[in-house]
Image 1: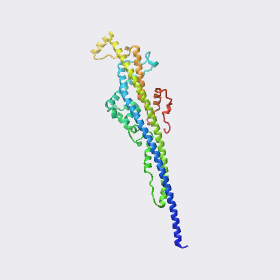
Image 2: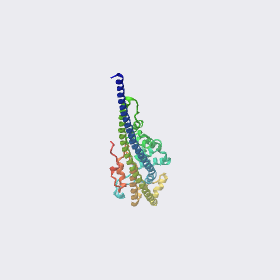
Image 3: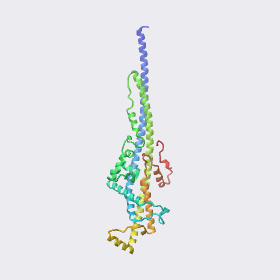
Image 4: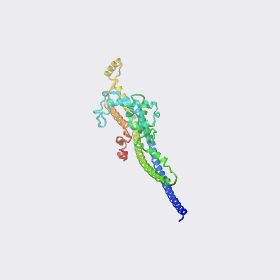
Length: 368
């Protein structure tokens, strides 16, 4: 066979083989593009759901945080001011309400309540809106006592803002990105770059086919990463929904308790006023008061100056304040930013008609 024909045949065969390789590379690249689009869709859908859940949880926590600050300032502050008028209080004995003979709030606890109330009052006076979402979420999540623990120096507002800025979860609620941390999804943001950038599709002969195999492998890898990230996002979304749910329940309970506490404080204030009026009419008290005034002192009202009904009112007020304090201080989140199991047990008695089991609030899947 003439040499030109042989060379021509080889050229045709090589061309056909090249066309096959080119078609194969086109197929690989097309599949790679489809997989990348699928990966991006999976990732973006899960990310959007997470961001939506984050916004709802942040709003719920901010509402709860603001309510807690106002209750610490108003109802709890009012209780402390009235309760401190009575000295030598005995929270045991015949006046104990509902058979509760335990000392509910001692002097040390009363002093701590006064401190937190004063700090909350400072924040309220300075403007709650000046706090960021992260700080309000911190008050809602960890309670006033914990958030104000570092307030020995500086203002209460700066203390709250400082805690919020150094806590990854609170910083995230305050507007931080996914990469800022919290809820175990810090690695998710790294996947985003790989999906959006995508593998470059190179062109050219056999190199094209070789690249297409690599492109397809990378696309499959992107899809796997996207699915993993989406799973983590869904875990975070479920956790945020649980946090939002429990925050809403605490808001309802605290709001209801604050109304009851207002009525209770009206009764207590009247009881204290009646006891002081009755005491002022006693001859022995008038003598003691005379000498006390000479010394520049004021005689405090003592527990024994109250009659049985007034003592029962005082006991009931102490019990209500303790119940409110528990609602205000029970952490919603644990140290890792997950839902604290203790808060579920605290809130459930306020909603006895709900069928939710305690563990329905808790997310255990995907957590260590």
